[in-house]
Every structure is written in structure tokens, then in C-alpha cells.
Image 1 (cartoon, helix red, strand yellow):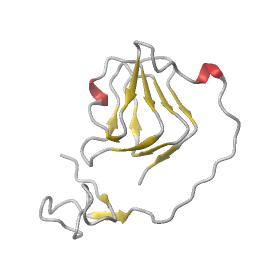
Image 2: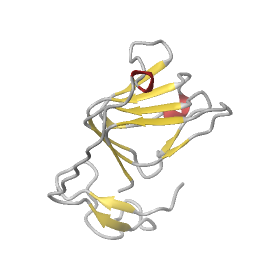
Image 3: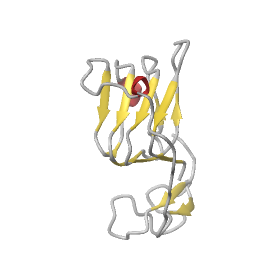
Image 4: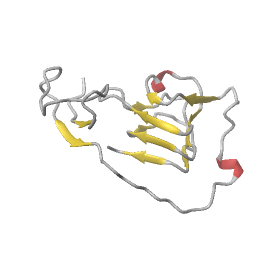
Length: 136
């Protein structure tokens, strides 16, 4: 089990809210931060070339549903696509990708809280798109 800290959700009624720095659910893991409030991120850059946008209907693509993301380490697809929406990982289910994944694409409007770890032997790995990948 990971012993890393957590970022606290600011909504006390939220699913992932931790009330105390050392919550009774896991007394070893502490709060390392609080979700930012009233943040604004502005990015200005050209849209990617068509060869840098995967086909979400391809049988080799996995389109992730917004919300809590699990099991990316179990997919047999080689491309993982995050469409517009909010995504996050639990403290013990970070994005350790399966060995088949060599491309992660973030569509405009995707906000992904987490980090990715590729485990492929493919000669080329890609992480592309226009979105936010936040380590919060």
C-alpha cells in the first residue's frame, strides 16, 4: 500500500473529503495540500496535427469515462483517450499504464488529476493533447 499524502477535497460532503490531517481511515497517510480554489488556467497554442489525434472508435483505443479512473494497468488497448471532463486517481491507484499502452491523449477540456507511468517496450511513447494534467 502506498504511503503517499493526499490532496484534500474542499467540499466536506464530497466523496474524497478527508477531515483531519491524519484521518481515522488511514492514520499513516497525511494531507499534503488542499484543492485549489478559483483557479484559472489559460493555454494558447495551435491545435495538434491530425496525426496527433487518435481515433476514439478504433478497436485499439480505450476512451476513459470521467470520474475516478481505475484499471489502466489491465487494458489491452494501446491508446488511452481522456475526453472533456474531470478525472482523478485514488492514492493507491495512480495511472500505472499496462504494457500495451504507448499513447495517452488528452482532448481539449479534459482535466486529469494525477501522473502517468508507461510500462511499454514500444520504441515510441506519446502523451498528446490540449488539456490539463495536474499533479495535485
